[in-house]
Amino acid sequence: MTPDQLITQARNATWMDTINYPDTQGIIDFNFVYQDIIADIITGIDEDYFFNIAKGDTVANQEEYNITEIWTSPDNVRINEINKVFIKYADSDTYYTEATRVNPTTLTNDTDWYKVNQPKTAPIFYIQDNSIFVYPAPNVIVTEWLKIHVIYQPQDLTISSTEANILIPPRFHRTIVSWIIPFIYAYKSDNNGFITYSQIFDKEKKDMIAQMKNRNQSVIQIKAPNLNQYT
Image 1 (tube, one colour):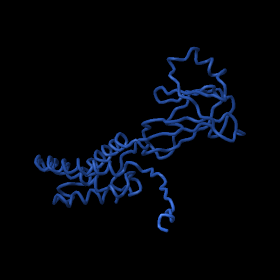
Image 2 (image 1 turned 180 degrees about the vertical axis):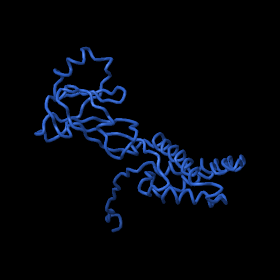
Image 3 (image 1 turned 30 degrees about the horizontal axis):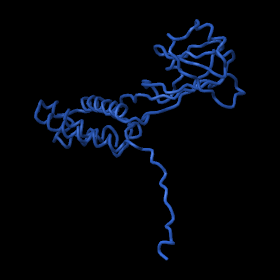
Image 4 (image 1 turned 180 degrees about the horizontal axis):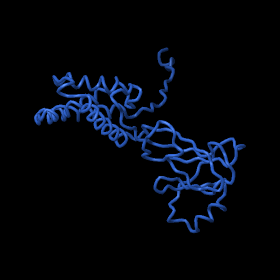
């Protein structure tokens, strides 16, 4: 369902209309609810939800690369975590080499030393502010030489966003509705309704997290029966 449809469902469940609970308020509450549920998924499910891969081009003799410049899609997202960094040093490289993350405070030499002398077969990287620093620095321009695995934070939506823009699986969209409902009661200054339906949301959220876990199912193995025991 779209944000508009989900807000309408919550509005209908509380006997409200677009006059008493306008779309301008509905989308504000929707996005608060959406981001709250997204945060619960990220922290409650250790399975790399909202994973994506970004690639960036090299600049000769440059070791610092701004993460927001590497990232291109989805637009305007916040990177929560960088899991891995992979590097190529020439267009002729068939495969990326995984860089090892290091703590810059433990490096024994000045970074200028690693920029030149760190082996290309064993690159390293660290993150400071909004940048990735990689060593050795490439000495040629290479298209999409840098690849990063990230966990990103989906951005707020608009009333006209589509169902595909909602990055929570559709079968759990009811959880969004169940959390908007208490906000409608709060908008009506109905404290009892807010408390009651917040408790319903808490149960819906726990059920959602439980069902979203363990997506990777191990291969089921079966054995042919031992026919000897029946003869």
